[in-house]
Length: 128
Image (cartoon, rainbow, N blue to C red; front, side, top):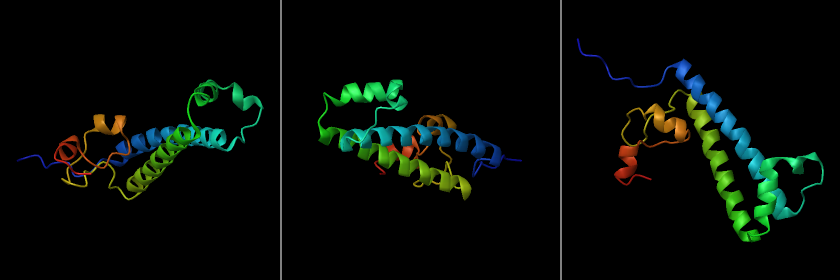
């Protein structure tokens, strides 16, 4: 008897991805808030500015234009939206399924790009 191809990730696997996405989301939101703060010049002088990430952003900010920082913030916001959409796909159990081929996206790819909706194969064929 031929083994049936797996059509979705198990609930346990989905939970593993959910944990990964929630961690990435937390980091992305913090970085977004910091970038927004730099653009708005509204960052405070409390303990927050002693964090290594903030220091790097602050020091890097002096060499970046407000426009470039705005673009970084915009990209970070898009990442947050993509990660939140991935959480929605986990909830409805469609996470990890390539929207072009309908096949499962390999776990290795999802661990690197947890919000991926296309397999490498589909991306190489020009799907966007």
